[in-house]
Length: 265
Ligand code: NDP
Image 1: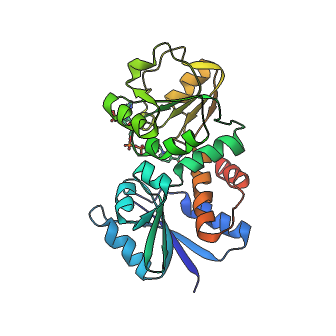
Image 2: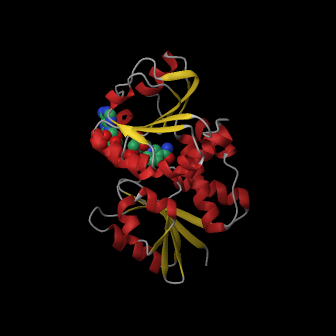
């Protein structure tokens, strides 16, 4: 029987994951099917267990179920524990193993596609929601000179920074600070908003990274206007998928051609 995988979310019809994994499978000669499944808001667990019991080998999990996936997993990776969220489930020997590949996706996008090594750099992470939680530990593992977490609701930034052993606070705490990399992990771009950033937040040659993809955002426009290099989150999306594919299949697909394909689509 062909190995089955799926991504669970709600809504899910917009997901690019089936296309990305089909491309990885073609590229690496793996035989598998990967579908998008809309889990009911009140029964994520039931939907995942039904998929597993029907022969599913693994699943990705997206908004709004990553915290529920964390609770569903019997065993978890250190980076999933640090995030308190799971985006990759593997079903084997009656066990459910949970991992979080979002942070590795971001770090690999920086290293492989954007020629930016976080090591020794001053990094600002905007936001303290699911996306920010997923990337904190993998960023700290690269040993940046500084990681600062800033969030609209300041106490959440302080909580998160305590977890990652770095600094954090409200946006007002950014006054007078400058960074080599500014990552927008807030949902502000979804609403067409710009987090309130000081005009001089970017160091010379800085990179501005918006986790959102698919359209230009006020954050990226602000960054361009202040001389920063910019990147959207499409590379992170493909890289987190590649990390999940490698966990499941033991082979690492090439990401650059898939990112290029999605950009041209
Ligand atoms: P959450 O809902 O978990 O968190 C939202 C965060 O954004 C909170 O910190 C919230 O602050 C902040 N926020 C919301 N609106 C505003 C605003 N108008 N101004 C300033 N801050 C705001 O969302 P996620 O963490 O799941 O997702 C965040 C973004 O990351 C989304 O755009 C999502 O699409 C993207 N993403 C991209 C991925 C990729 O692979 N490229 C992977 C995962 C996410 P507060 O605490 O004050 O409410």
